[in-house]
Length: 415
Ligand code: SAH
Ligand code: ZN
Ligand code: ZN
Ligand code: ZN
Ligand code: ZN
Image 1: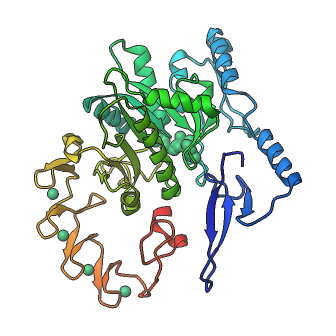
Image 2 (image 1 turned 180 degrees about the horizontal axis):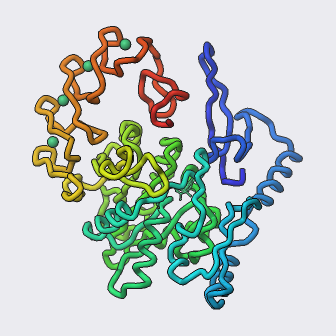
Image 3 (image 1 turned 135 degrees about the horizontal axis):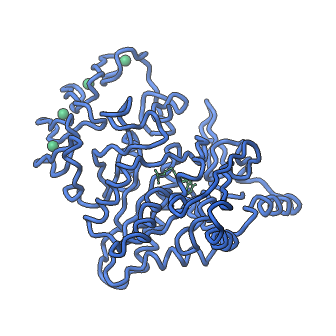
């Protein structure tokens, strides 16, 4: 499909044991955005294949990355009064809004110029609040990294790029991989690759892949870290598979040593996906730091926003090295050897700081683990759960988060 190789899914229907397998778009979960569909065993005629190729060709962006870079070069030569930027949604020709007198400073913050694509099911662009973005960058620098592979983190990329152009002794470099092709209007082919993180597809072909490989190549001891903040509705399995391929790319590029190491990584994702992420990356730990967003009313920091953000950092770095800001209430637990939220109490029985959401959790002796403060132990269900739940058994776990007790359409992680 236009977004690269499709993924193989399985359609299960109630009562039937085996589902039927089909290919569908890797990135669009809404059929309105991409309606590619093919049964696994379906024979596709030559005419349909040709039509499909034609369709894919027609759905490429109207300008190439190179053309966009050329246009940018000409744009910056224009006097301020002639610099206008159209904020309309990509390829949607209604509600055009123009910004005038585009300054050089504005060109360094494309994420502020571009209208965030909030289409929940496909792009879901939630931009870091300045505080969280600065925290991430400071942490990366303090940990000694000099190269950042920014996968779906345009605002972090932009902060790095803009500092690099302003401060002479700022040595950090970043390469942005993102599916939002609008960024090709601001960054060269060495700074941005049009990439789909659900199928590890480089739209720019071998040349773009090579750019990424080159970037991962560790020159004179410059250490690389990958930072990613995928759309939360995304399939963890598909993401993990792509990230493993990026990790493999990093491994290949290493000259010597680090044999048993993984490419250092920050995967930013909601805490309720912890078990799913650990399934694919057992070496990862979830940090307590709450990542805040600008354009997400719900995901604001506890003290200022209405609710606490459920978004965390998962990393394969040693937890004790991830220093969280004490002025925001985080403290170091000497037993767990990691920084935790102020409300996260060390449970003597679990021998761990068990809270996932920042509130103080309570230990249930029957479940033999700590649970959310609002839960109680239901003897019917034989586990701790919400007081107003209906006792019923669901044999299979939820399709989205993998947890038992609910199905995908009522999954709390999607609300
Ligand atoms: N908090 C980040 C943005 C995260 S929003 C920041 O401020 O930098 C998710 C990002 O992933 C967006 O930039 C979006 O364009 C990108 N994205 C969404 N689907 C993608 C896909 N299939 N492949 C690559 N990037 C994708
Ligand atoms: Zn602890
Ligand atoms: Zn406990
Ligand atoms: Zn219990
Ligand atoms: Zn019950």
